[in-house]
Image 1 (cartoon, rainbow, N blue to C red):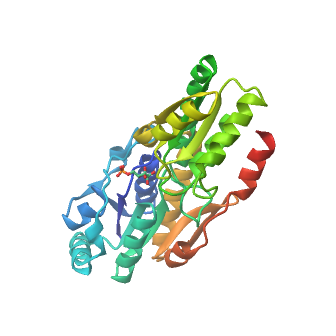
Image 2: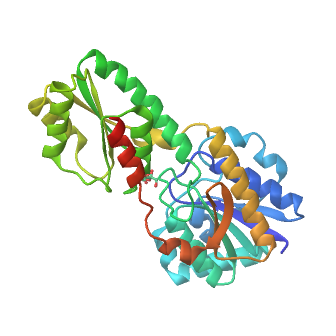
Length: 319
Ligand code: F6P
C-alpha cells in the first residue's frame, strides 16, 4: 500500500483534527502518501481529494471542528453512488481509507471495504454511542462544555430558587446526560435508559424543595425526550421552584479538544494507519478498559447497547 486517504463524516466532534494530524503524520512516517477527502463521503463522490503534507496539519491539534469538513450523505447507501467513490479513489491510487465518524459512517466504511477499498473506522462523535469503544473522540470535550455551562446555571438557579432544566445532545444515547449529571451533582437525570414520567419528575422536585429544603434543582435531560420549555412551565406550576429551560445545542460540538480527546484521537489515528499497513480493512479502532483495540465493523455494529445502570444507581445514592 502506497497511498491512503482520510475523511471525517457525520456530526463533527472536537478532536477530529487531532486524529487527522495523527493519520497524516503516522502515514508519512510509514512511507505512505496521505490524501485528505473534503466534506465526508460527499468529497469522495465529488472527487474533492487532495494530498496532505506534514505542514498541512501543523497547529490543528488544538482546534475544534475538522479542517476536512464533514457531511452526512444519505445517498451513500446506493451502490451506484459508492461506485463513483471507489472509481475516484482508484484514479488517485488510494487503496486504504480512514473514516472518522459515528455508526452511520462505519456502515459506509464497511460497504466500501466490500467494494475493494480497505477502510478503518475511528469513533468520532460527541454522543459516545458506539458500543465497541468505551469512549469516542469528542465526548470528553463536549462533557466538559456541558459541565461548564451547568455550573453557571447552578449559580443563578440558586440565587433565584429556580429549577434549571438543561437539555443535552446525545442522539438517543444518554451518556452525555448521565456523565454530566454525575459530575455536576444534578438532582435529576433523564435519558432513554431512565424513561420519562412527568408526574414522577414533578413529585421528586417537590420532595427536594419541601423535604430536603434545596435552594435550586438541576434536571439534565437528553435531547429528543420531551419539550423542555413545556417541562419548565409545568415545574413553575406544580412545584415551589420556578422552572427555566436551557437547550445547550451545538455549543456542545465546538471548542478546543481536551487533553483526553487529543490523546485518544492521536492514538486512534496511529492505530488506524498501522491497521491499514497490516492489510486490514472493515475494522474499527476503539479503547476498551484502557487498551487500544480493533474490531470487525459488522461485529461492532451488532454489539448490545452499553448499560449505565451502575452510574444511575450511584447517582441515586448521592442525590
Ligand atoms: O451526532 C452528533 C449530534 O450532535 C447529535 O447529538 C445530535 O442529535 C445531532 O448530531 C445534531 O445534528 P445536526 O448537527 O445535523 O443538527
